[in-house]
Length: 400
Figure (cartoon, rainbow, N blue to C red):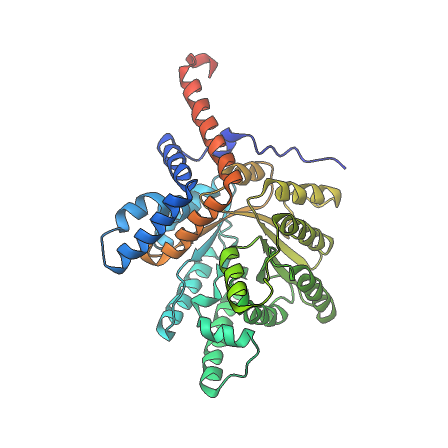
């Protein structure tokens, strides 16, 4: 097997889209996020300031929001979409407003998703979009559905409204050929999300994968679920869309399991999560005739596993069923170097009002603190690129 020549150490390519000011700001932010104390302080102070109405929008927007979000609206995010597109990197726009409870808010989120789909129509710079189901459905209802408790008449009507919103979204996604994936959420509402996503895949994925679902591979039951889904797809003749991630709710999941006295749904160690992520990649590539895969990972080893597995199975770099994805503002050394080698790569690009996106920003800060090794890697690359640029300026003009 010929191994890939993708080089994640090429920091010149990794940061080619950042000017010196942007590079300096990224360096400052990642240094701050290495401190668990500062991240906890930021989280608490930000939530408190918003609750009492302090004017924190401008400093947040100029710093952590700018690092991880495209803008407050689709229109404001267009510049980032174009900038990524010039480097052959797609954008997955996501309206990152969550935790809403009213029908009015759910309707508003649905309309915003439809606006994304229309923006993505015939626009190769936006190959996918995404949907967080709690943006269009009440958390408590999803929790009750996941526990398989019978719904009362009011809840059945509420469910019919949810399904109506989803049908409208999927109708336009199919009409404009814009794939949309359902984000994974907490395990105690995930059964309902899985069920709704499967129902949509069976209905809409007859010719290609328009509907994708997300598997959090830190859960020990996801390989079995993926195998069952593959068997079902082959039996019932539909395509599967899969986004693989490691997972974003580890502390919350383990704490709830401990408090409520059930076995944690999360692997007990990172090695098992890494193993299952790579195993899921293999399963998807071995069934590439019916599966569209989006590998959402910042892990270099898992990324290289996918790259080398594609080589082993003679799957072209730009195969339309295989995408790599990283969060906007992170792991540019992976994103830009993959794109330079002709792989399909996207950035998950959230947008929304600053105050509404704060929960997402806090998760990003907390995750970055938790994966200290990776943050050290990002910091090292940024510092090396800063040194390289300083050295280039010192060279005589003819030697640059």
